[in-house]
Image 1 (tube, helix red, strand yellow):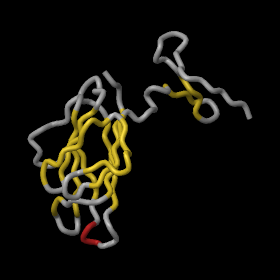
Image 2 (image 1 turned 90 degrees about the vertical axis):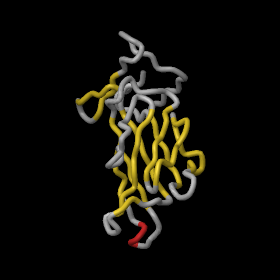
Image 3 (image 1 turned 60 degrees about the vertical axis):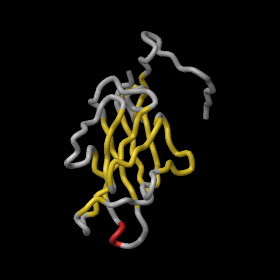
Image 4 (image 1 turned 135 degrees about the vertical axis):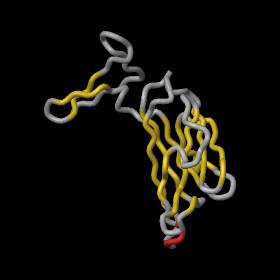
Length: 142
């Protein structure tokens, strides 16, 4: 097994043009395949990042029960980027919820620097603060 240790990778043609082989012959842009931000937080009470588990996140705001926004340290190049998330509450059915992106009824759309998400309980039919929420973004940075 070979090992390469480097501090910086720079594309041969342009700085961010690095292609990796995925599988037998498919290729993918290294830059496009990287997560651009993530946060893992406790959404109960005042939202708090759990165990320093965040990357490219400058703040998390509680906008309402079960509704949050995260502000990026380094912005995306536009408001058009992918956001996905998941969570787990405790073992009781009442505290199980799913993460939705850009909370329903929100009057504030995602921007290049801030995105909104919420935890929704299908069994209770309402937004719910939960203890373990993880959210990531993909897309181009500015």
